[in-house]
Length: 282
Image (tube, rainbow, N blue to C red; front, side, top):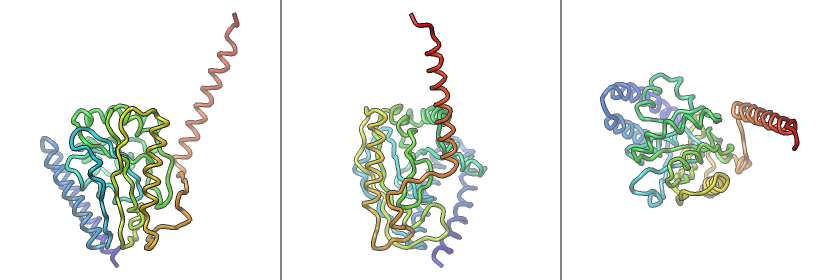
């Protein structure tokens, strides 16, 4: 019953705020619309607590710099992740997959927010688009949220971390805050059913600028995944299946694109080697 009531609340309020924000997007500037969005996300967090019985503890604010651009790199398990994180800040931008652009109302709002909309499966085109769009966010000294896995992960599992977060880190030259998250135990991915209980979102120790790609990616993944597993509630499992803890998964769309990219890279590498072999030896 609580799941039914919350889902009715969620879709009804979302539709109303989508209409309101589209109207506000016509006005000059962004502040009024961003204030409305913050009100919306706080209302969603209220609904999660009061209607669905999901109590989210948000900790680690002391790890977030008071001023200047910063990148929040979060575990992504639930549609509720963005609501909770967004509710903690006033003017937040984020990197999101292009699947949201199929909804016209949301597409208009994302444009006004200066959201960075990319192909969820990654690749060179996604990196270029992310770099171009995020330039405005960096110049404004704002905070930006990115979900490094690129996809919703079933609670306990993880996807491969995509290197777009490193390109942002390298371009911005600012700290990255890893964000651990267990909200998937209570609201797993896009599931209709919700599970009452506690969940945690924790802002972890910043990763300072200057690391190389491999070192950065390894450190980011280790911090997020280790702490997210530590925070799991093993007394009240909710949507969590214990056998899923630490499992690496990959959806079919991401796998197909990765295999195509690797095949193309292999062809280019073989072509370069053949050309080198054909060059006259002096």
